[in-house]
Length: 214
Image (cartoon, rainbow, N blue to C red; front, side, top):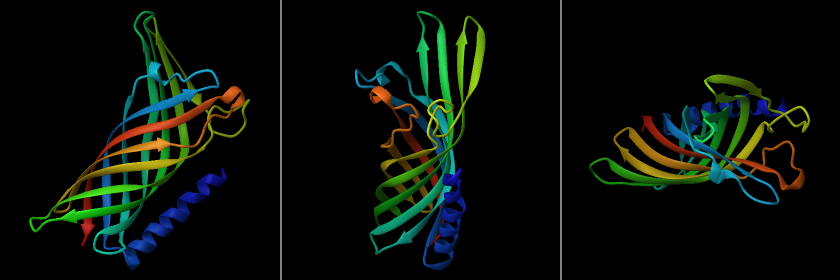
């Protein structure tokens, strides 16, 4: 897929930035809760779904603009998807999606003499769908099927490319960071879009990071 060509380009950009003018590299990972917004021209159906637990892991380069503001491009592996439970009919369904996300965040931070600081960050992200699986449990039996990423509305389930906005903030102490952020998908990743059909990712992330460098 052409979108996968973005990966080596971004990795090269991160490495170049770190070796030239970046002051620090951040290793990060954590827990996330994901959901999928689903709607058509008649109604939205996300209230019927539950958030699915997952994880993310990756890194970022912190490039200073001045003493307060920074640019933070990164790359993370992240799980997304949704859960759907119907206790009345004893049906449980789950959609697991694996992505490579590339957040491009603008960050503002403050700190005191004790090394304690606070930060806020906002910016776009680009996501590339890698693979996925849908699973349904009913009557003690389980059935599963692969989620196909692509652009063919007859053959594929979801578009591979995703885009959205990430907003968050957190606490910094010494080399450690703890943050909470929300990824709001803006791109309709449904391959079949007739009758106003929409599918968009939503992810709430809890992230622990460790800063290497100044």
